[in-house]
Image 1 (tube, rainbow, N blue to C red):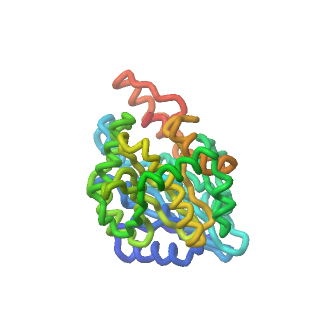
Image 2 (cartoon, helix red, strand yellow):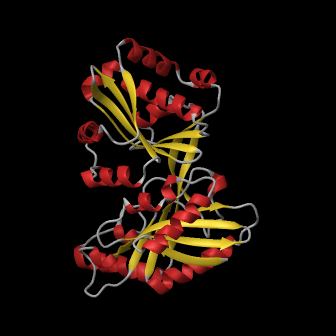
Image 3 (cartoon, rainbow, N blue to C red):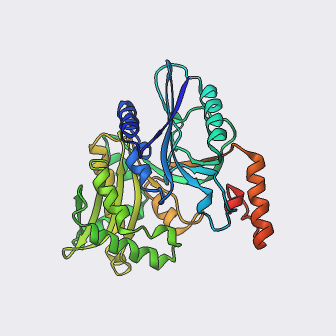
Length: 349
């Protein structure tokens, strides 16, 4: 197993990363270097650990975060930790033969120790066939809704909850129209609707992305995203940003104006997404989960796939347990801080 780490800031390595991604039949958007780069702050590194042998390939995209950037860091801190990008960020595996996954993890752990990477938090694919064997247990973080697709959209329609079918018909009767936007032509409208929704829900600051985030996404990932806009009277009243991989579509971000709820635009928007994705030959449309277990957002999504739930899982890897414990003790000693239950890594909780 040949292990190496490619850095997206180095043009030749970024090109090599992209070439490997393009050889992958699945081409999940979450492993694309420009997607991973979206979630890197100034000072972070966007990298991909690659393992290759005769049996196949492992891609593990990561954002390396310097601990020196944290306000609680000690003077002279030079270590890092790692996180996979938002969504379902890897590691991913592909190939026809048996791989030496254990060899990849041994080499990767050695790289992390040498580079001063203390921990890694990995958000895993929902689809088991995309996962390599992992070096330790995984943790479930709640169900996500996955709408299986196929050529028989009529059968999919009948699998929706009755309320969805009624709401789609209501939206159509009231004149809601759906527009696909492959270029971000209505980006201003999307951002306005999205931020309106986040404010209404009291979302934390992480969900308020700067304008540059969307501009970088539309510029760097052409063909890998599409906006679905619900219009009424020519105005965008609901909108979703969909990520497009070779086999799957993913709802990344969405929003709806509160005053438009009686028009039922959400149901029509998601039904049209299902129709489009099925016509494109995609295998599944991933709607994701809710903000809290079993909340209204999750229940609404579940109406489109009553039997289509898969567990969202994460892997919490510690490469240097002594250093992780030292950081936790330092924070506790200096500020009276205590880690949040279930948070990883604990020293960031």
